[in-house]
Image 1 (cartoon, rainbow, N blue to C red):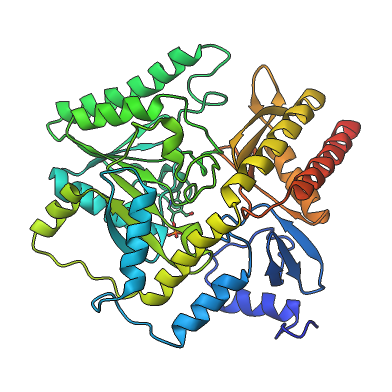
Image 2: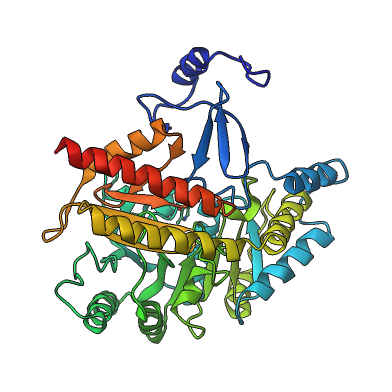
Length: 446
Ligand SMILES: Cc1ncc(COP(=O)(O)O)c(C=O)c1O
């Protein structure tokens, strides 16, 4: 047994089955992995076997980063308390975040998870607009608390879900490859028009019912729906329609923020400099695994919230340790040029995957930006029928080759690449070679 392992793997499994709620699922449940340590883009199991990690988007600047460990330790042994005391870490971090966002997004709330951030975003929108109705994208996931299950078709429309609440309107996800309107039938201009018109229809419906829209909430690139890149101009049109109807626009950057797209800090910026949401939520990569999350909004919206007279207090949100870690994550992204790395590695992968697409007809679509890439697998390129079983097989084979991958999308046929931002060009080449070999095997078996 590794020195840092306290129990045998079978004992860990036994205790987990006995004491952990059965709804808490494991990756690779038939043969779960027990990880003992990690460094950079690699994880090591109890046998010391090394896995290339293509799934952990939380450990953004790399697993076990020494600078994160150091600042956390130094701050923990000095002071950790709540945000009702003045502290430099909090205000310096808030100023930095505001400076990374376009104006007028410059007022911060610190919380502990993406769910808390999105729940608070909904509250802000409701208070500011004095309305409740929300428009969400199909297949979206925004968090695990009740308010967010309600706006997450990924949950409410699936087993255990209670269905769509009457205050929630679901717009089709603008997936131009496998969605409601496809790029084999429509031009790019038609696609963005059709998808944004569908949102307009929901806004009109809400107005007709006499209620009116409070907010539109969407990821700026939809991860849970199958690594969807929003068509150019989509957010510009939708944000305008929502605002014209008196609603506010919430960009969920919990998965895709902090430079994952490479060219920009935030994924909504891919849609143009003039495309600015009213509320941005962030989480996962923000603390590199330490639970810190935030909502950044405008002074106007924050003032409406304050005007109710209700104080906002969050026991852990914005504590000195969390903010020290948040600041260190930003330092590392800058010092190690991780956005440039996302562009270089992402481009290498996208080019390589497009070459693999020429060779393997199972690859229907390759899409992505920076370190956010989806490989849409199909049984047939004309019908675009999802190759769900094949996607699961590929993930299992990649695991046997010590590469961690996952699949998503409504049909679980989209291989999803969202690794720590330190993944290297050599890792990308290794991934491409391994995938090529596995796809050759699949071809030979058919
Ligand atoms: C897009 C998105 N928003 C919000 C959340 C919720 O974040 P958390 O799990 O930190 O509560 C998630 C989590 O997967 C997410 O993917």
